[in-house]
Every structure is written in C-alpha cells, then in structure tokens.
Image 1: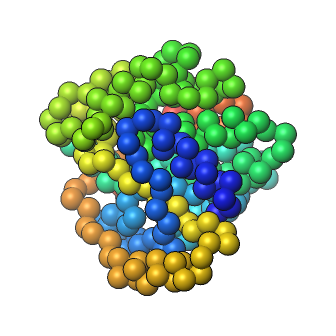
Image 2: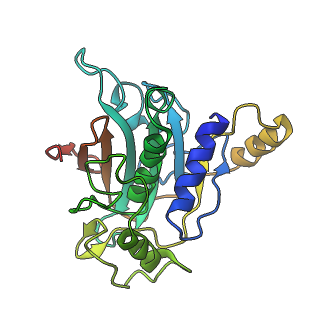
Length: 256
C-alpha cells in the first residue's frame, strides 16, 4: 500500500469522529484452515488491483469473485466494497473486509476529495451503516462531490453506537442509519480497530516483526451462523448490495 493510500485510509477512520485509531499494519491475515471461521485481523482495509490479489482478501472476494474483475467481457464499474459478515439473530459484526479499487484511486482525472469519500463511505458500511435515504448524507447511494464527509446526523448515529465506548448489545441504536437484523442495528460490539497492509518502503525490521507476530495469529471459530453482506459502490455513484447466508446463494438487490 502506498503512503497516499494509507493516508486516505487513516483519514477515513478519523472522519467518523468516534476515536478510531490509525490503522495498524498487518503483513498477513488468517482465514482459518476450515470453514466457519472468523478472520483475523477482524477489520481489514486495502487498495487492490482488478483481481483483488491482496493476500488479506477472502476467497469469495478474490480472483474471479473480485468485484473489480471483468465479467463476461464487460469491465466492472465497481470502485469500492465493504463485506460485512454479521451474526444472524444478534446483529453483531463478526468481521469486515474493505476493498478500494487501485485503478480508480490512482486515476489523475478523479478529484482527491472524491477518492477520499470512497474510503470514508466504505468505512461507514464496515461500522454497520446502511444507505441513507436522503441526499446530504455521505451514505446516500448517489455519492458526489457535494457530500464527501459524514453529515451531522450520521456522526451522531456513529457516536450513539461507538463513542466514547461501544454500547451494550441490547442498546437501541437508530434504525434510520444502520442495517437491521431481527429488529436490531447491525454493528460491532466493541470499538473497532482496522488493519492495512504495510506501507510501501516501510522499515524492513518493523515489517519482519509484524510478520513474526502474525505467524502466531489463529482464527477463532465463528459464534453462530452469519449473513454475508457485500455493499458495493460504482463509478457513477450508484450502489449495489449483495447478500447471502453463509453456504447459500447470493441475492442481489436492484441498483440504487
């Protein structure tokens, strides 16, 4: 990951104003050696190529499953995605994977503000935010230069769930802003920490130390059945949501 991309990732976390720390660096990510395992690190964000070949990307988002890949000879219009795996029934987020398309982020014809907004928007999804129904919100599905930061209402909703501490699972959080599962708002039940790949040209000694630390990192079993939610943003600002129950087929929503 370049220093520019890493800075955008860090700014995206800060923009939600819930005290999220700068992303830690992870040289590897564990997916477990069998199915029904949680991913470690839990929240992973990266900029990647059109094959999603970053080693921190799970198999159902990589290679031919990459949302940025050419499908049927047609280039993909998707430029960002957050995959949320949440426990059915409790609405607790098990883990998230945030991918931003490198060719879009490196396009000199795209404004820096809009590139940054893609990162911040996808972080919102990784916190459990759904698409907003009104313009003026960053999570509104027609992203534009008119809205590149969370709105006051969105910041208030983020604070209600996460600041200064993550609220108890049974705490009612505004349904207007969050995905819903069995009448509860989908979110992380702890203050989330995010990881990115190491920055290109970073200190080799620190990179080796990270690698050695992560060699001992083991995935934990999932605590229950999960729903997989892929929320994807297109180049034209429209959004697509694809949902499946673990082990089942994907169900694709209409474009917003």
